[in-house]
Length: 230
Image (tube, rainbow, N blue to C red; front, side):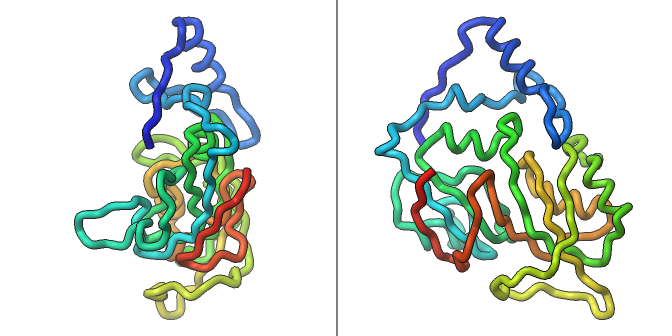
């Protein structure tokens, strides 16, 4: 997406922005970033006119890349979505499924993806084994990954959701139970949820993103998309 960014007008402006990033909410406190790591705030993103805004939701199938082009012949968004000039708000791993929001609005992209926006993302996660509440409390408090501590997550055991069969199906271990969890985070590190469950000893077998902010997957089936209004 072609965007133009404006810089803060002064050092004081930068300091106020940094201070705002440090504020906490029900998810916990975010660690401050260095100037080289700090992401742009939504206010630095150009806003499209309401009549020009496009917002699509898509149920990304397993084994599909979250991009429109690929030189290796793998499935991409272009295999499903013919709409031009929209881009994914955040990524979803090739081996993950579920909700992807695409838009031409940089402000909305930032709101949905940047941690300082505090926009929650909920995943339905099938893990190998049966974690106890003590295990899940580790995720609720935050766990130490290679790239630092995670912010506290909301984690609940859930009934197996009525969703589509995955192709290929998940491989199960004989005599080992699996558990479905609803995990809500406000971060979006690379393969974060998978690394979080592995950290407490329960590898993720299947991961479906159900919601981003107020946007939910609903009854969309894999490969289906529709335009919505936000």
